[in-house]
Length: 435
Picture 1 (cartoon, helix red, strand yellow):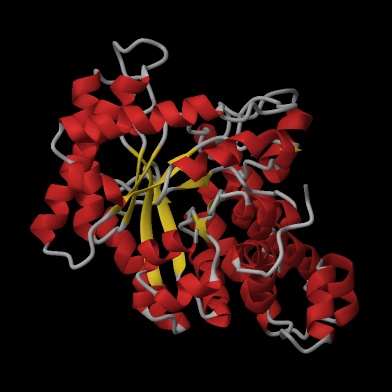
Picture 2: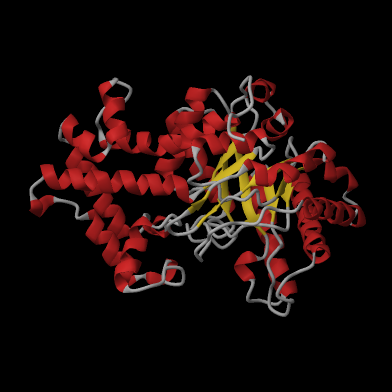
């Protein structure tokens, strides 16, 4: 499976160190900076992906087009000191998802422009996701339709790469059993693992679609298949990985040389489960809400510390500002959070789907965050307050691993999550003990 690391990074040294790669699916600059520092410390490449709703040819919800996102990531890398050559940029769920309310042909034309923009901007890993129905489509698309649309987008990507004159050619991820981005909206008790027969069928029908479109030589760059290993999270619960349930699925890779599985919605899995996933062949682990959930925990812990140390008239009131803005602009959460007002209030802050992440760029919230950071930057935070509000960071401070500046504390909290993924992807001498 180290082969997939080399095919993603082109780095033989990295391929010898890593059994898999984690993918940071976030556009928050502090999250990306923390991930880059992790990669620097580990001396590894870093895979960063933007999703089709974050970044598209019209700007997405971040306001960034693909070329804008590339510049944005490069600027952070330059500031942190991570060589740009160590970055791998990917596009997640690229397809007609944002235009599902349009007729299929019109939606696919938008998807073609999306793919062209991503590849032209230099994105190297392309997840072709055409699994969703558009206006006029049946409720569930057949694998043949999904594969045909995916091959159509692959041809657009190849043309864009050739036009751009890139040295390295894109690699592709396919799959029809694609989890919902950002976690499940309904309450879950269990998740059905992809059947081996379904995985084989998906690969076969896509292989034929590539052949029918004259993309035979491109197929060798299809490096991963998205499957469901039995991991997911809803607003308040996590469905943990159970290796025994995925054993037959993991065996499929023995008959798919050159491919690995890509696992979505791995957020909040136990560290030992992440390691077992990689060992079992789910060599690309996607994490998104999990890192911004940690960011929110850090910011709110600092806000609690602020109330202890700063006079009331000068505090940021971050929690109250976030709540007020989310209530005034409910478009990013009201379709997902249900129940009485108390339950919705709790979900706005604590849901595992972390839809508060859509609001950090709001000018009013950003101003409150900056006030919080400024208030605490001029104060020596007592270590006993760290023990109360950020206990892991307390011990890191005591061990002189970090200082007690607000940004250092935030980065440490986010790296708790990223570090678990980094550890899971390293090559070790023995298989995981979780069976």
